[in-house]
Length: 79
Image (cartoon, rainbow, N blue to C red; front, side, top):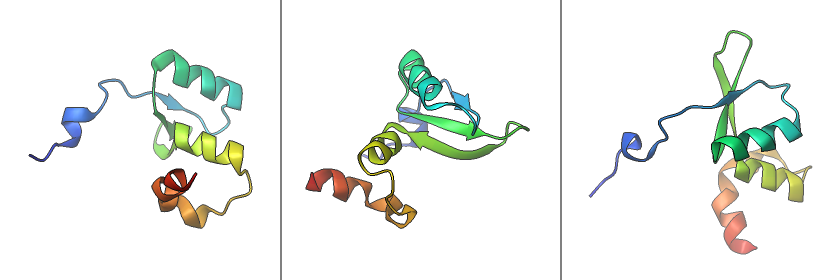
């Protein structure tokens, strides 16, 4: 049986601005128990997403290339 996004998504979307500090980002993730946050611009348009995985990847390898964006699951499995 195939699931649809609406069956697994959260009912509450939490957004942050690109200039949100790392500490504020962590506090927001904890407060809302979110795995990812939408990043919005001044007009409140989505410009990106930041996830716990992004934060962990940056923390362990802050200079990694953005080309490996879709290699996350392979990298996790290799650790």
